[in-house]
Length: 293
Image (tube, rainbow, N blue to C red; front, side):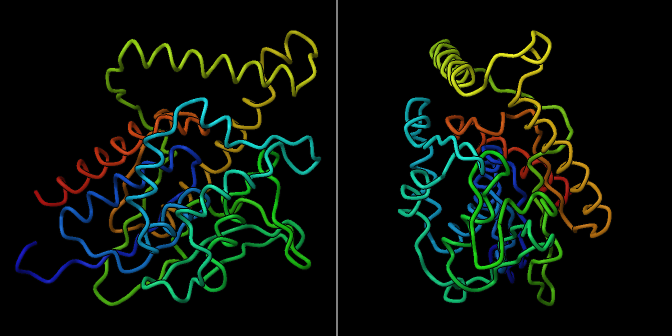
């Protein structure tokens, strides 16, 4: 696109917890090809990645995530037995303040929107102004996992509960192209080869997760234990957000849809950052190459 007017992009980033790290690879590929991102809307991890990008801190966040191993992930998680959720999120967000400056959204160069859900009033809450940090914290509050955000007469949780691919909330301008990135797509995933060392580390991480489950969740019947408390929550949320996202895609028909498989990682595999970035990059390359043919 050198020597030509850059194609403007209205970028929409879905939620998906650790899968949302793939958004970094998509953004990098869009920029490498000369596209100009002129507005962003995101839910949950999409709100986080989009907000960090809009505030100019994406490279620093990527570097930090690449350094995460399993033990660091656990140290960042502040477990709580609160009835509102298992993870307060304060420790994570305190660390993330290095990459999520507590600035006003209206002071960001790009129009930006983050989506949360108000459980009291049963409606979406779209942040286009006010504290960027507050907007992201509300948007990532996955029900039963992260504690919600209290705001006057609101109880705010993850926007994916109602709108995990917020195409209605991205600002459109004349001549732009909507690019929607859906990181929970029901498509196969081609996993790259991993080293023996990585296999050992993953086994250790999974062992730590099992130990945590045993400590936090009382043992019940064999059938219930086999089914898994966390897997039930995760699968229920995933199915709900997938079907709603598919309906939104049909409704809005974005000019460009980039799908990343839900099989790329679990919602909490944040230590797989490098693989996820590459998954996003590969998905973007495939779609953008097909466009240019």
